[in-house]
Image (cartoon, rainbow, N blue to C red):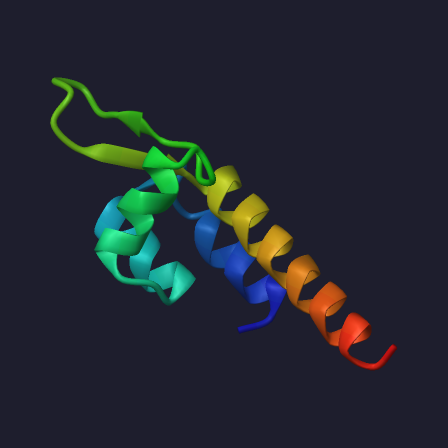
Length: 79
């Protein structure tokens, strides 16, 4: 999925539940919770404090960071 396509999709909502974020990030829901608890993915509890909501900009930021880390790993492999 190209960055423009992901950004367009994310702009349709301001925040996502953990299961929705998992689909966008190609992760399991448990992995999303680990990222949230490890402070690697910004999130907040919804009204009533029952469900985690992940802001769209947090998902985009995480994807960009993951992409940059992949680029760094690929470049260091060839050095």
